Image (cartoon, rainbow over the protein chains, first blue to last red):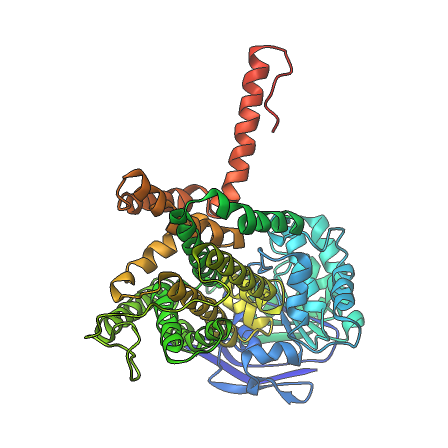
Length: 238
Length: 336
């Protein structure tokens, strides 16, 4: 469970997050909004890269914002990036091991835990392959394997399927849907692909210009007039 | 990947056969190659693995040589212990040189480390290297009979000292290899590609950057100890600030991302000048050659000679193969 209240971030005169409040209970939750709505800034606050000027984030009854950024992985925060960040010089195995060795273990042997995570994302490739030699979809899957390893509690996926063809997006969605039951973590999915969000997330929240404008069951939210206006604009503005 | 058996055979060749093929002049040069391969190993670790460009490594080498020389004159400590001590003391000082790395990167880090190296060169020029005198500096300006810096008792002549140096170099390479194949190596690779991804992955980037500087400084300090023994006499004129820049050039040419690149860098930095001098060509030409070499590496072969050579040889083989096939249908030569 994660509860965000009155979260405000300012960069000079810009306010990418403006008193954002939201509560996600469990499972996979969607976070959508037009470009520049503050989705990635929100993730950056949760990862500790951006310090908010006010507001609190309580995750599993702990004050997330008081934890130093690099310690959050051990606590259980996992994150993928809008521009995929699988480490090219390392093998698939080393990419996942890198996260595993900086987080809590589930008790199985380190090697097994890493191999399990690679298997979980359904990669039919050699764990010893160098990531630099892989294609876009497989690199995205390496990132997902890194998110799933080492007892994650809060998985943040920032457009994990951006630029992927439909077939591979389907597989990605399949993996994302299985993260909560596989790892016990709750997932927040940011994506512009509404069919991916609809198929993965029971609940979805919508950000627009740093403000939370709607949240609730995904299907209802997507029909919400305010959400449609946020995406398509209003007559006055247009 | 090169098989360990191949490495072993190569090593045995270098230790047992090479000295009998070379004159003493080239054995001395080979000792220098081994020493500078260690220095290149340290710099390659920083530049290639972690992405920290340091232009102060020659100064770090000078610190290692100074410390080792001072200990060798002042005590009768066994040589391996002296190497260890100079490695550890240089590690502490070199990590201080690396402190700006926590705040700076790229060009600015290069600039700061270059200036620190310049400062160290100035200090060494005023304090001089120890020559058997007393006091903290161990320098005696009026002495006529300067005692040579001692070598290990088991390796006093040139050939034995060459072997000794190669074995120490192998140990340093194994030490670095043990790092890059495990947790620190993975952390460094992550930092090099993206600090944000590294932090999100739970990596304490400050710690691992300092760790890289500490390890690079340690091996460079050990190399400094070996250098003190190899030269017998140290003069501050031997340690120029611009050596650090040449060092970066040869590391890039050899291949900063490969341990073999460090060996190639050592050969470029120390063996080529010896060859040129022997052939009667001024080694100054090397500066120009290295300039062209770096240009070529940066534009066409970012992974350096060690990566490019096998590819080029394979390509040449295919070209020759095609030439022969084109000329006649006879199945002649040109194995790829």
